Length: 403
Image (cartoon, rainbow, N blue to C red; front, side, top):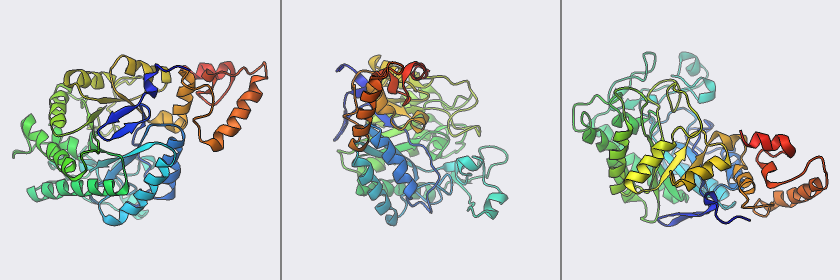
């Protein structure tokens, strides 16, 4: 078995060591009840841990009730929510993965429909069906689009309150047993609202110049770093560019990442977009495999700090290539993990790190080992590690794995 595969080498950040370089991206499920964890979350996140990922990230979790993006977002704005997360953390860790949480405030994207129910601003029809509608907070009273709710421009008291809420939520995350925290500063939510001149038209010390627009996001990171132990890593997800003329740029992200590093951030998670209504992340640009990898590469190279690559990274070979070329230190897998929760175990077989099922949960591995041995005796369906990446056998499965 190969020992030189970087995807399956450990990664240590402060007091946490990931067993491999596969992280499952935070992806909204929209099933929380008033911010509280539900049974679906246990099945959802434990599945990825059973599938072999080194790190499982819990979806965007609101630091205030008003900061929810949708009515279905989980929250850590009150102490009563800690117990549900503690049980979830214990469940995921029982399968050998580390677990992190992405803390967020929706900003001017708050009061949205759940993604699978429209993914736009809440309507009167939604309210009639039981959804709560509210006025969002944002740096300026600028809606995302003409038919979106006009947010309330944040006062100094709002800014102080939200900053304190972020610190309090981070403390609750630590109390729940999370291994690390990611501060969400991307995708058109509150902290990116402050960073981007498209959403921030303030004239006080929190608007105007790049230094001023970075001020509140840096204050949030400072507050989180101060409240959690020094052994706990902090990630920040950024939108490296708005993809819009006059908006946030990659050059801005390099400057900002330098400041984040000074504040004790351990890894920059490089996404992009989100300041248009066309989706949670990017505008209507043409996207392809690895289209955001150059962002992670530049920040990693210029700042000499760890970065994560995300965005249409589907195959083990491509993930390994990114790491071998030192363009990132961690690979975030998102929708591909929904399609195949056992992607990590399959990647180990495809890349020659494993030739069997010893690393799978024993309740599965015992059966699958017998299955593979039986199939190996069938000349029409020859078995090999490359045939597992889609859970199928033979030539067709191998061809699908290369897509």
